[in-house]
Image: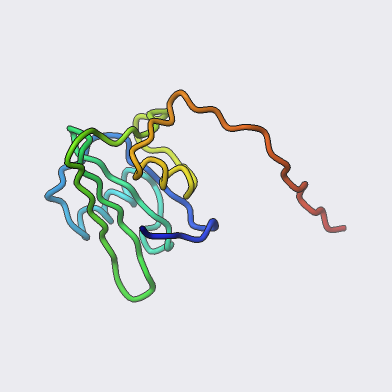
Length: 119
């Protein structure tokens, strides 16, 4: 199991992606489709048409890393809020990787600190 700092942002490309694509083509998709910087250190998630394979592209300061997961049964349940891409947080990605369908889940209200306004 991989763990990521909470500061890492996760961008999901919600449209099916050809899983034959590798580092260069996926980083191009990050720039052109998701309108993000592939060298930012954030995670970029791509899933195939059947939904049983996922690739995660990540820049680690010295090169691209590509994580690839294939499910033996079932599919990944991705958010489908936006036809191009959507941003989720690291805990939500972890739950998706574990096979949970979050479409019926709701987040309970939690305390959040108000931003500090400097004079």
